[in-house]
Length: 298
Image 1: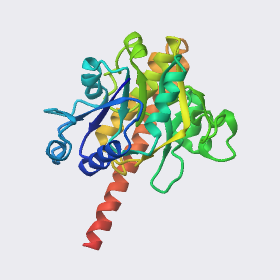
Image 2 (image 1 turned 120 degrees about the vertical axis):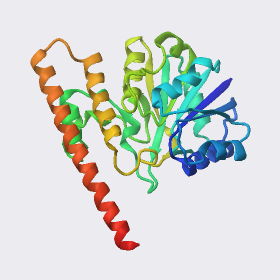
Image 3 (image 1 turned 45 degrees about the vertical axis):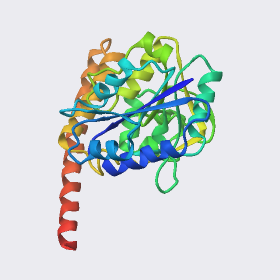
Image 4 (image 1 turned 60 degrees about the vertical axis):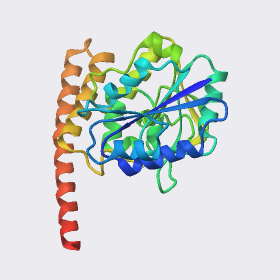
């Protein structure tokens, strides 16, 4: 059995080091491990780090930032491994995590993609580890905070797949792109990541395409992986990232839910546009506040 891990890096040199060290320290016992790092023109010494400290790692140094989907697809196209793992550089695999997910994939041939329990640095659960496909109602509830409250219930909180506990394992609609283990057979049937998404939402898109082709997605609560939330994108999104995120929302809705109800479509696109404006303003204010704080400390 072969497992090919793909790490797409952008300005995350120290996170890449920690991620690759975790793979070295906790490799799968049941599979031959191959690791590729695609550096999206970070300019922070990431390629030099990989060459110097991890010579066995396959390094692809890009001339520019081609985005998450395109960078992963470069390796997905040429790999022949039975299982592929898309792994964010801001993750660290814990002991036994890779074997636990591989075992699940081996026992369940209907599963195209699987993901583990993601935990933040403080040990709390990253609720993005398991999700349902967003609908206008669930997305509105999630982004207004109603769907994230303890009193939300399954209807308003459905985006977080609350029917399955964080330590449980079972079928879900989607897992997080920070860790997505994918079966080669399913990949060959459904195709690569949609490069129309530069960053964000490509994981949901892929899971939705797998489901529509008859495959299943599995959340493995018995495997644990550290996820440094915002480790690659920073504590706030830049304007390009904000635009990419909201364009991704619109693209996902248009591909899988839009087209049959023009009025609803218009309301959804207006809501996405308004959310982009609010998010961009919040990010700008957060950045200014952080810079002022640093200036006072200096």
